Length: 225
Image (cartoon, rainbow, N blue to C red):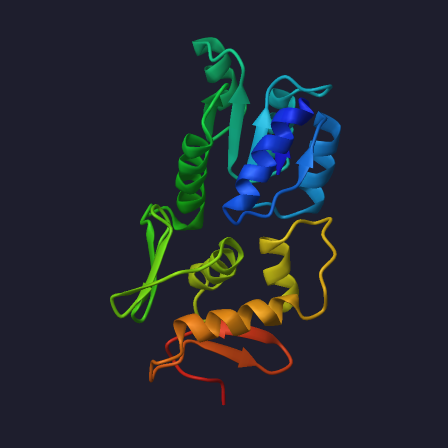
């Protein structure tokens, strides 16, 4: 979620993140930020300090007081030491000074999500001989690089971050597409079919399996009985 009252900046960041495979919601007030953060399990919040009331510091502090552990990257226009300290003291995990490059924002986001996913900070996700380098965004299997679209990459990342777990179509859609996008009933199935062709065709060990009546699972243990 992006929380930014300057709609032009919010739209620019939202578009840039979506081009890199992220599902993004944008809100423009502190009140909306609190509402959406309480009702939606976001992976990361980009939170501007200068917002219509309550401001970003108050939003951050309230979320932490309510027990939210979602990573928060604070956006600040001035970047003074006092402002950065205030953001971190309010519970932010990191800060970024405006104006910033999209490249730096993406790097900060990857670092925060790696940290929240397990704390070891390892950038390479792996199941059997399938690997994903979340820093370079390169995917390969058995030493051969695989070319994926941004959405295919995002779907595969969902599986690689939770190997052996059955993911429903709804869970995949929530992580890969925006909240306000209407999903056609078979959109997830189409992407799964494309991924199977790219990561499993030509390999004896099939990794991406359908769990009938439940969803899909990425595993090296073989298909479900």
